[in-house]
Length: 478
Image 1 (spheres, one colour):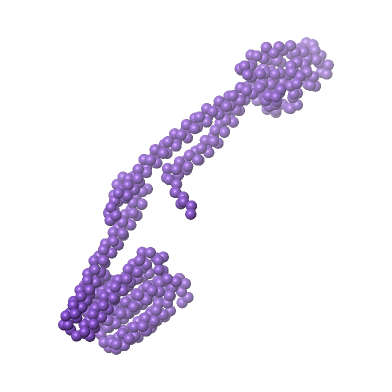
Image 2 (image 1 turned 90 degrees about the vertical axis):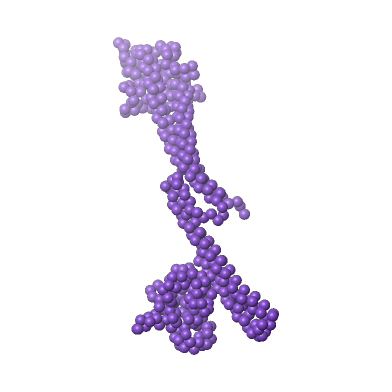
């Protein structure tokens, strides 16, 4: 298996999130500034080319008119040296008549075949273009210069070409200066981001160090007084988890203490009974019968403790032991009523049952555990010959289970702690875990449970109506 990919740090996220757009923007901005600088440089150097062309035009003479006109030029190359900006840049020129006949200059300089723009950049008949001469890239200015004298008049085509070393050097210098400034700006932004992130994440690092250095059982809330406002929801959520864990751990510790106390009693009784049997204080049959009863009570207690632990695990880990899907609460009630019919018959109870199909999303084993505990409690508290009713109905989106017995009901003082583990409703029997298991099952299923007393017409308690409401499955067809 490949190693798990480590998540990107907050510092790297901010650096990428800020620097990438900034670099792209700076790139576009640099390119735009570079093109603008080139246009400015070309405009400045083109003005020099135009001045060179005008200087040549001032030294032209003409004989004749129209087609018979002939131009004369005496232009020494030294006259162009004043326009050369450095020792690398060279100027070349060509003076031609309109028909293309060379008058003076470099014959191999390509003849101009363009046209004058409608709106030339200067107050002259001038055009600028890029070309190549003697293997070098050149910038060429073309000036149509009228030449007139007492001997005649004509139009001269003056071309002045300049090599591009100086322009390209200036463009490189502009680009380097621009990139240097922009790189410094990016470096400053990156440094500021790193420092700001370092400062902003300092409370997070302190918080993580505090959690790392805590003892395992330390579930005190986090203080984090200097935490930034954006971190407060995380701190509050962590404190809520701490409180839940502390509450759950406290419940588990109390449960373990109570369970140890509850198991100690039958084990102590069992030890006394074995010692009594060994001494011969009671007949062997009676001793074995007493030992068997004690073992049964201890076994029932252990089974209910395991059931409570299983329900608690399913409540906090819903995906564990979730079952195969919705089951019919009505069918489960009928099934368990049949299984417990010997207990019902043993007390000669007036038993009745009425159910409808009510698919509940809770796992089937949870529903069976719930019904078994409620029905067992009802049978135990219903006097011999009393009435016991089981009803399953639908109320909107809920399935409603009612276990109505004719027992003594529940005192108000006892009702507040009846759902706590090992809080039995009477001292005559039971482990005190049945209703605690029922409460955990109902809470895990998102339902509710109530234990209202049923009042007779004379104001006395005639029984207990244990009422459970469980949300039905969305796939229910009835």
